[in-house]
Length: 355
Ligand code: COI
Image 1 (cartoon, rainbow, N blue to C red):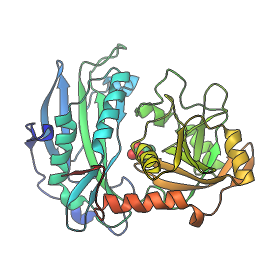
Image 2: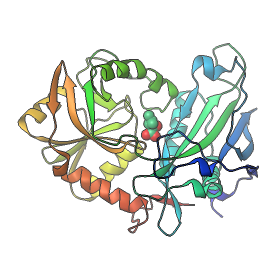
Image 3: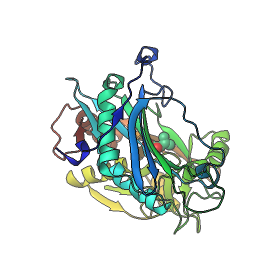
Image 4: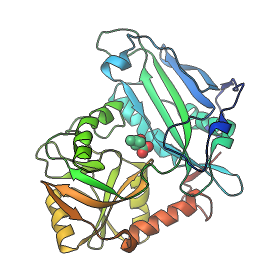
């Protein structure tokens, strides 16, 4: 018996499945949630009352501290179905580790492995019919935790809820995206919470992203808070570039430590590419696009998977990247990951967590 099988989880199955409402040939991102959710309560220093119950509304107090002071964190993971029906989750152990780092930064309790991974396994086993199998589709898994103490004093909450919901999804971005380099607004500063996956990091992105959308860009490219000189990440994913013959990703504590990004950089290294995790200045990127040394640029994330970038806007000027057809590295990595995640090839790294 593994650590993920040890926990006792009460199961209340739904009386009526909503599965027939799903058009699996036309999946949108995050619209219809699967039949069940996992819920765990944290009180008096321990996790209790762990259940899998029908997906539905939950009652909260208007004075619940997450609503006022933002102790709220989440993860994004994907589950896949192989042709033979096997259900697999991609590297959820890495999301569990990151979740607990986010928790610790926001003074929230850690969620133990048997609840996070064991609960997830059981949830997917129960909702296995919700997992699509067509290439480009997946079950998006959203674990999240928020502070539930009903009190307005500013202090770490004494109680929390941990919940996992899931939904069948298609692509988050269905075509290459354009990014506007953000040179005024800031996502994260040194010493802040940029590395953590907390709800506030996304709330603060909405206004500058709307401004970028109004100018015709799909997303923003965040830059450092000190001088807006160095590239950090896009609004919904990490960034990876191929400059010359090197695969490069910006790195640091102001940037989310993405599992997809990590996976791609690990593959690049194993395949013999030169890799670097370092600061990349906007100037280096723009000059590289102009002189042809930047041959690939893409967003990497659970939801975004690998989304090619076709245009970058900087100070009112647009810079166009080379056509997607010639992007040798990102096309190769996308193809490899698709084969691995849908169980079409061996899994030499043990990245598929079989349910
Ligand atoms: C994910 O990639 O899982 C995320 O959480 C990004 C979110 C903006 C959809």
